[in-house]
Length: 439
Ligand SMILES: Cc1ncc(COP(=O)(O)O)c(C=O)c1O
Picture 1 (cartoon, rainbow, N blue to C red):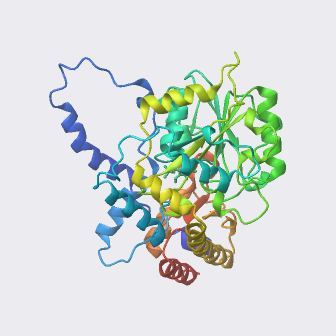
Picture 2: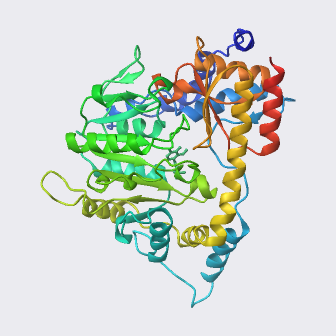
Picture 3: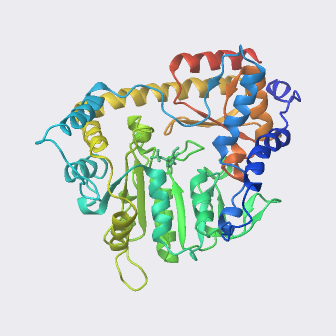
């Protein structure tokens, strides 16, 4: 039934769109470059295509141009849409206004973040995990921290990622020279280990067949699959890292969405402080995607082979390459973690997770296998026998809904699409109605 809907061959020619849009910039590059002595970095050269969301945006814009009257529903990019509760924006406004008076003015703050905020992060997210304030580095978001961690660790180190995975781990690894050549046949970089995390293995890698790497990027709840690793699985991961002398870079950006007993932090696992760095963000639980605030925990117990504490180098990176998060934004972050602020944010998160349930029910009613949407705000839908760009194009063409093709998250995402539950309720309901009508 559903396959007849998705098989209608109305694919957009990716080639023709890219060649058109790149010709202008190629012309610009041709002008006046002969005197230049600087070669493009080989690492930048080996990055594949454009950033996934830029590609989606381009296809979406092309569709909108051809269909000016269509009401496009955007369930693609994982960007929050609901307003930030007033108690939080008021705290930021108050801090901004205080900068206009002599007693309230503040210049640079501690590069690692305001003490009060670090204490609130420790109490809210790391209760009983022995995470100390000085191990928390407040930042301008998780994406920036992923790159700072890349800068911290030697570029010769080998890495493993979940497959499918959030693209920033791979792209930032390639940028610092950890990728090796890209193999078009497999859709993989030669030097990167892709740990298959599909429905067949409960979205957790088979560690008994995973080769040793120096670094392991691990995201839970996962973007794009929406699945959260269980305690047992994370114990295995920590054990695996210990046996191999590896470091886990754990991305907990969606931890606040966990609704079951799954750990909300890698530091819930005994011994994790000796093997893991945790990166997290205010973006997804507080709607701070545009405001920008995050943090990274580097435990004192995490040491290099020579016994030198990694936290000391991370501190150096933060002081050298970042000068601390905005004091206005940190005031907002503190308000997020106040009892009233956190309660208000929980209501918004509940709303997004209800959206996720509507999407899960919709696709299940179409007879499809659907994953995620319980511990994370993403819904991961399987379309056996179809390519994910094919499904993306068909849903765009037939229902005017923007999704994300699973292949954009790595070869393990082929045959899937991801939908974000971060839309407004009326859009999600309308998307559900359109999808059901396609039966
Ligand atoms: C897993 C994951 N980590 C990090 C980020 C980036 O977060 P931030 O907005 O804090 O940079 C995202 C954004 O989509 C994400 O999905």
